[in-house]
Length: 72
Image 1 (tube, one colour):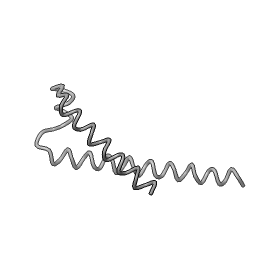
Image 2: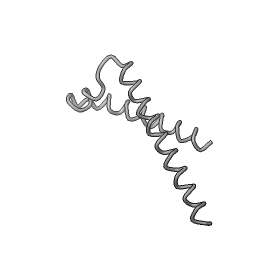
Image 3: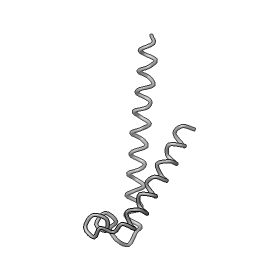
Image 4: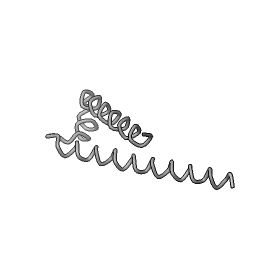
């Protein structure tokens, strides 16, 4: 019976993690669409460190919001 209860928590954690990743990717896609330049191209091809830092801060901020919403 204990293993069944633990399995329930593992499945719930996997589902919440998957949902969080999907929401995070969706937020990335929205930000990519509303910015005038292609952010990925700026970071990878042009080696724009400032854009990379701003985008990393955005991703961390959204990840913290998602984690707080999931954990209540």
